[in-house]
Image (cartoon, rainbow, N blue to C red; front, top):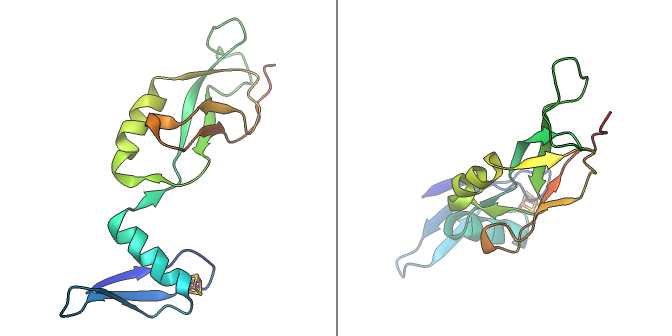
Amino acid sequence: MRELICITCPMGCHLAVDTDERGEMKVTGNRCVRGEQYAREEIFNPKRVVTFTCAAVLPDGSVPGPESNLPRRVPVRTTIAFPKERIPELLGALRGMTIRLPAVRGSVVLKKALDTEVDVIVARSIASE
Ligand code: SF4
């Protein structure tokens, strides 16, 4: 028996996941069919939206100095949920990236990250001065 909270909608149903004598998964506690879909995905192929910050560089490639009001990091996020088991690999790739200012919200910084269908985009616009 495994317990999960469905995060598909604000109802937050408490799910109980069990397997019957034939080895088939049985989900209870869900108020709708999406809860069962959520439980299956969470158990067999868990995914999460990933947020991170990448190093910012000025248009000339230099790092914003201490006299500047500009942030040194640019927030980024995945466009959709990313396979959980590969998140450390994704963070490793993002850790080595720099983003040139100005950064525009929604612009793609890593397309089809790690050969998935998930893009990484800028989460918040930041001017360059
Ligand atoms: S099971 Fe349905 S009603 Fe309950 S939290 Fe999930 S989506 Fe919402």
